[in-house]
Length: 273
Image (cartoon, rainbow, N blue to C red; front, side, top):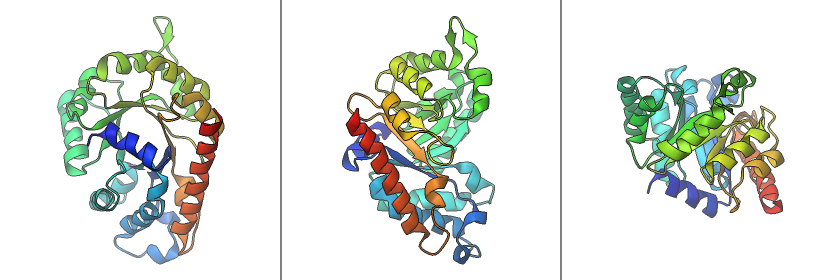
């Protein structure tokens, strides 16, 4: 099953547009985990197992693992998700972007070493930097388009022939790069008007939307701007608000409560469209 088939099945079967981001910061772990050698794996595994039925995807951020020399724990975590929750796609949030020969190695890292179902990619080096990822025709390639940080406007709002750069990119990906049908775009929840614009430009292409929760993105505005006519099309990511909902030994149960509330809030506005 390719990435898009898995994603559509998860939207339907879990009745969820919630993507649970996995950004493990050991300084914020419950005290009983901090001295364990595999604390990152155990922390994330508990979150995954507690929220799997509420999510349409999981999104581990590679920097949080690599900074702690925990890439082996990331491998183990993705293997655990695939074994215990095989219907939920895993997105490796790596934002890779480099010349073709190096991009080939990044693609091998994401899809063969870590065995992710999709990866986030920075497309601003052009098509040849993205093609090594697109060559894996059953894997998702999720390209940065309109990012959630304020500084994204410095470049993404530049005028290129009468349209903004992010708009040009959205059309380029939708019209020319998405030959395998496995592409998606990143558009931040902090900019609902731009979510609506990208949706208008790309039809039903999935949008990964960070910025809900700790970054202050509005759920209702995001859903109204980005849902397709079928009430799907979004992967609304929440990371810190879910991961660090609790500080005690019941942290996974606390995370589940926040994930459930977030999933339900998203669904309330899906139904209200």
